[in-house]
Length: 555
Image (cartoon, rainbow, N blue to C red; front, top):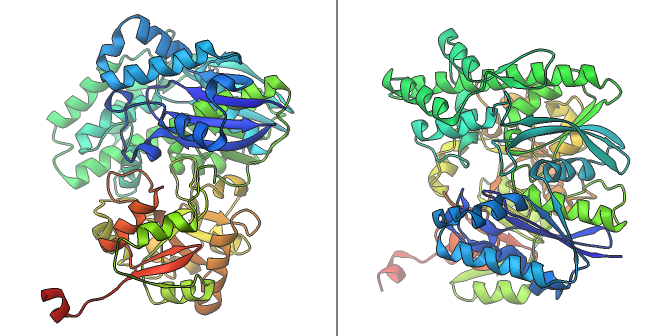
């Protein structure tokens, strides 16, 4: 019955996890606690989430029974080689403080490779008794780009490694190096390129260019020829010189080729994986590459697998999660586990919420599902702030903005309110009982509960919910909502469906442009005051601004 901490030292997406007696108690990313969204570690501090969990549980890192550390080789090699001078001074201090706490602890300290942590965070949360486990990303301190592992019961072991030192290359790195040419930030905005791809046209020369960077050789689970980062940079510089990034259509054509190349390569790769391991009909994914929900749809439709599962924190936030799970497994506590929801952060009580509300001129009415549904039906924009905030990049009903999905102009209106420039359509959340009537769902419903896969919308629903359907390919990234695991979201949908006959609403994360998902009460009340949302819905009441008439506003 062990107290277990999981911490990790990847290049980005730091997080901390606490497991007690084989149950995940907290899983929290640093950027959400720090109120700033930074794609790389040298721009910020580390350990904020760990300190917060220590305060919440009363269990200090050094007092745990087990400490699982992911990517330790990275921080160890970087710090000892003085490369940490690249990072800011506060970051170095935070790393040293964490290492000193670990050093003086009486816990059993266990070290795990980056991709073993990714794989554990996927397989051990999937609920599958037997599954292939594939991780893939842009690389790490151990110079691995990905692994294939076999999961069976509580056992998981790797059978293949994509090694950066051989002839393996990173599909994810292509996307990273492309971002500046699109005007985006690498390791943060790759999803915008995916959204742009649907508006592009096929160009054989572009496709051959991407194939020259990474080509899959059938029969070998490697990528070749060996391509160094400078060649990626040179390739995109060449496209820029040719003028591909001067027009929106040119950018879209490049994005189309990138997405097509990614899908083409992964289908070939996974078809061979499936052929090698025909007894494994389920497959789990982790690593930043699998944030690409359109690729996940193509994989799901291949026919090689009965179900896929993408862990909700598919990026490097899963390093701490995987390390904690593996340490809990070592302690003998971990049991077969199917993640029901991703609400693994902190919650805030009525007194804390009221203290923030008192700083503004607001009206308040009692929380009522029918009132919420009526406001949504009227076209109001509602911010939902309730329960524990989510682990991973998706807002799933704890820190969400809700709008009806029936208006074609909602996309532009929300972008203006949120000061965003989203290319992908916003995502729908849909009652689990009705999901099959609205989308062509072929398995993988569990991963869809975490909004990690696209499905094609059925023809009769495309014009009914235009705000959440991609207008080019008629796909959506639905969140399937179950009453037993996400009761607040389900009840809102249920009441709205009674009024409108539509069991679907739009869900986007409760944050403005450039921010992480809001977690603190003061953040969401400020957004209400700024007019980002019309109403703020909490468990303790529904808040709105007091409208002043012209005479009052001039006083």
